[in-house]
Image (cartoon, rainbow, N blue to C red; front, side):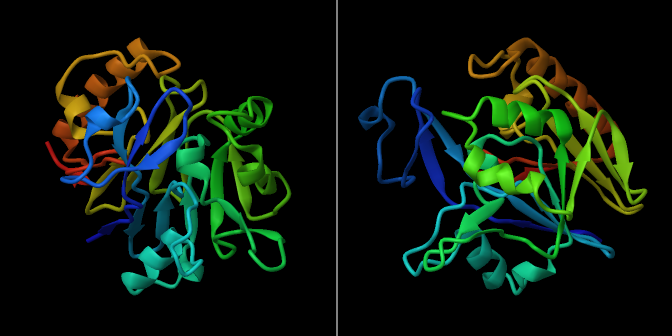
Length: 248
């Protein structure tokens, strides 16, 4: 049986500036946030199979008050050494998903990959697009190291990793967004990134204005929901404030 560990960095609101502001559920009010703000969880996932420790996206890359990367602390709190991660699978490179790819040492100022023992899997076209469009949604300083290290695999199109992890380029949320399905023979675990970010979006038909192609994302959610129901997928929801993962 695969083990799923949500690695939530907390709830945040994000508005047109694309800045993420912490939000305390039950205490803070959406009425106090700028008009048009979205409430989202920032929630990478660790999936442990009999072969791998797989990290799905890397969060914002924020540090806790002790100066430790939040994502590292969450792993440690779950009894996992961050150096044990074997694969980092990136759905896309928006900063709320890739901020934890690398970090600058507070003392030496040297930038390193946060999971040096892992192989990172990144869509090649998404990488080029992200560097070209660095600014509000993409931050090139967080991801540029990916082009300079040999433990990075740049994928194109659809394919399979080690015979049991399938990736599929979807577009929709951004031009080269990709999704992953882990099928270890016992469990089928689906990570839809920002094409399937919240359980509520799976249950309603709507096109999000913030998507590159909202209609495409809406269609994909319906397709994945049907496939998932038929094949017994467990869906991982990166931005869901209440339900990290679910089956339908």
